[in-house]
Length: 447
Ligand code: GLN
Image (cartoon, rainbow, N blue to C red):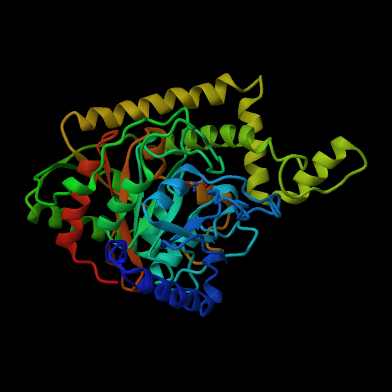
């Protein structure tokens, strides 16, 4: 598949032909279930769009039954910015329902397969976007990352996935999961493509009150030859599988060979991240999902009276994982438990943020695993708790609002990809991309 950088220099005629071929390729791989729909807007370079980002006049369902039939009334800001840059939304990709999950198994549309092994999950929640790029069915895609949903599927599928600093990319038109954590970001074949797409979708937007209103660009200044200070976390990686540890060692070697200064640090025990994240995310999700009442959006199941209509619509519209989180979110926000859970989680969130800030006083970047294992087999995570625990390496980045990029480093003996992430200071995307470019060059990962 051509890269985004290459696609930018295609002529109009070449692009038309390319899109026809792409459509045929997608139709030839229905079993992957990466796309929910191929629609195509405009004449630009085709980009796959996660099903929680609004494209005017397209269906948008966040992978849920409750939003069946809902048509987006306006474009998300990222879509407007993409179209201004000559890119076109091409199709909507599969995802875990309301972006809740790590496997894309909770989608109303059924599971998406990992292109490297159809017995394995593609990761989640942006599993459709990751599988599309990895299978050569998209030049690039947009995903959203609340607790790892861009970086983890990117790692499981052997592609690049980047989560911007909170506030860099407008959330206007993104279906909200947990508003203080959500960010849209690029999922691409190369680090340079991620930088290009990041530059296109980031920047000022008056329609999102949490937008940082910063318009600096990284692509013009990309420099893989900068010598950086990079923190590694020998204790933190102890919970990862041997495959991941081996890839980590390989990346450390590569970074040393590229001339970066490596030093060892310790991170807080990740078990605090899990608790703080799942309390915060479910509390916010409960509030955000209250709007799906069968009256204003999508599917309605008409009951005996208004209250029964709410109950029937929500009971039949939401899947099990979403219901579980609504229950948990209401519980942690309830008056008797608010102080004990929600307030405590917010305090923990500050401690996590401070722990990162402390490390960043003396380094430019942190090297971390993305997931404790390679992609698991379908049904392998036997209960929700196991799935939540598999998020240990991604969620603290969202809790602290930091930018991070996952890139492929190695494959294990079963030929499954392993991704690692670099994490940077808030708003220091330039250093993040420079470091990632250097690592990518040194590693020479082949698909
Ligand atoms: N797996 C995490 C969750 O289920 C993260 C999801 C996400 O980033 N959207 O909440």
